[in-house]
Amino acid sequence: MIAPIKVGFVLLSNSQNPIPSTRIAVLNMFAYLRAEQFDPHIVFEPIHNTETPDVAGLAARLKAEGFRIVYFQKVHGDSVLTLARELRAAGIKTVFGVCDVIEPAMAEATDATITVTDHLKSLYPSALQAKITTVHDGIEHPTLHKTEWGMHSGSRAQPLRAVLVTSVGLDRLPVLASPPEWLHVTIVGRYPPAQQRLQRLREARWQLAGQTTFHDRLRFLRFLASPQITRQAWDVNGVYDAMLQADIGIIPIETDPTQGALTSWQLKSENRLTLKMAVGLPVVATPIPAYEPVVQQGCNAFLAHTRADWLTCLSALRDPALRRSMGQQARQTALEAYSMELQAEKLIAVLRSLI
Image (tube, rainbow, N blue to C red; front, side, top):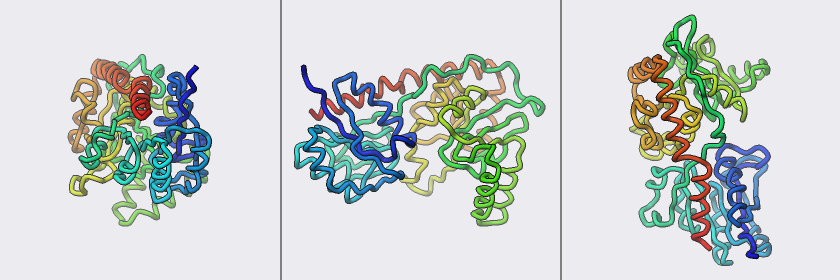
C-alpha cells in the first residue's frame, strides 16, 4: 500500500476561529485531499490572524516528520520567505495560496502559486504566470437554497428584502446611500449581536467619532436611524438564514478607478457573489474584475455602476417572475463552476504536479 503524501499547511488564521479564506481554501479541502491519498496537517496556526508570522525553526521539524509539500495560506514576509527557501533546499515542495494580495517574492520562492481569481493571477509578473493556477472559492453549503421568491412587488407597507453580506462593519450603504421606499436592506457583517446593546452603542460612538466631516457624521446618523436598514451580526448559520429570507442579494462597492490597479476592490474574489447566487438569489452588484466573468447581464445577475443604474436594476427585480428565473439561473451558474468538488480537483492537480 502506498503511503499518503504528507502536506503541511501554514495558516493565516487559527483553525478554531478561522477567517473565511482559511475555512474555504484550506479546511474545507481536507476531506477531498484525504480521499485522494494526501495526508493534510496544520503545521502552523497563529493565535491571532497574521499575514507575517514568525515561522523560524519550522523547516527542521517538517523535514524530520516527512512532509513532502507545504502550503502557505496567504502568509509572507522575511520569516516565511526564509522558510520557503529552506524547504526548497531540503527537497520539500511549496505552494503559495493567495486571495487578495500581490506578493511576487513568495511566488518566486515557492514551486507553485494558487490565486482565487484569474484577474489576481494576471496581476503577477509574466515570468511567473506558468507557476500560477486559479482555484476559486468553493460553494460551502450547496444544499441550502431558496425554493420561493415571493409573489409581491414591494411597497412601503410590504417591502421586498435585500441582503448584503460583508466581512466588515459598514457605516453606510455604499453607492445607494438609502434604499428605495419599497426595499428593506439587511447588512450581515462585523457587528455585535443585537442583544449586546451596550457594545453596539459603544461601537456606534467610535464610528461616529471616526467620521471626519459634518457631512459624514450626518450621513452616519441617518444610516443608524434608517428604519429600512438592519445591521445583523455575522455568524456561520445566521448568514444563510438571512439570505434564504431575502428576495434580492446586493453587493454595492464604492470604487474609484483613479486609485490604480492594486486597490482592495480590484483584488476581491467572487465569493460574495457566488455565495448569494448559489442560494438562488437574484443579485445586483457593482462590477469589479472578479464579478464580470461570472455575470451574464440580466440573465443570472445584474451589474450596476451608478446609483441610477442600481435603482433601474432593483426596480426590474420587483417582478416576481424575473426574481425567480434569475435566481434559478444564478444557482445553476454557481454550482456548475464554483462547487467545492471542482475546486478540490484543481487543488489536487496542482499538488500532484509537484510530486
